[in-house]
Length: 344
Image (cartoon, rainbow, N blue to C red; front, side, top):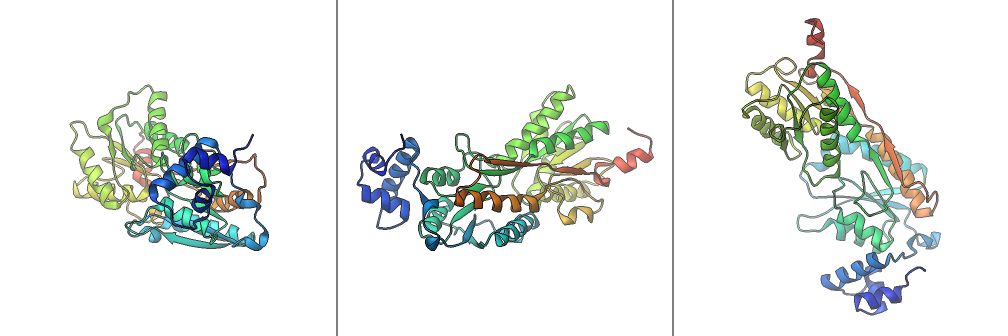
């Protein structure tokens, strides 16, 4: 039997009107009361019928929220996702609303506020976290949304996932095929869901090759070129530095390149390097970067399709779309030079 709003109110110890305020963004509710109501909604699996509202009440707008990371909107990877998302949304009669959380604003509250105010019909969640509070809160409140990455454990949110575990396996196997046995990893922040997938793929490829996992070869980093520089410097300072490195993103790989150059090491000869994005710049750095090409535009298109389905209550059985990445081999991994020297 489906839970009712009255049962939610009883579980949270509040009135039915207060539950309604939390769900619709009306009235004045303290943070503690809002938390109790959302917890009760999650515990009872209460599902408000947001998508059953009349067409007249719809905004025909999809919301995309972003954290307040400096320069985030200028990132080429984000632009690819938004391009595919905008095109597919327009075909289905939607506008896009891009909202950035302020420095002191909680992104989860921003998502809930946009939905409660009915400025958006549904939300696209980027930069998924391992335990993402946005997906948890939106699922608990029954607000249509879709995740650009794996949703948190126990949350059945629709999602469009690029298989970065398989991408990392392919990248490490490429380096193994060139004779490398000490392969480092510059890891994205561990709270990002994609970081967990990359580490799993990195370890799986080593296991398949009969090699042990060496934690001294893994450095958790940030997201910028400067972070990649610092991480590569740390790897070079180890007692047995890696001969090849997989970077969790092209930005990190570009920073690693600068660190190797400053250390008077030649990328592709002294240390092989692979990135996990294939941004447009990857083909034009020196040497060109071997990278795993993520189908970000296709991901954006699929996000719009799944969110439209969630809003309109269509294709309820289709909860996840998985896209494959492709390894693009260039000189930074040393394959061309090694082939010329007869090294396999």
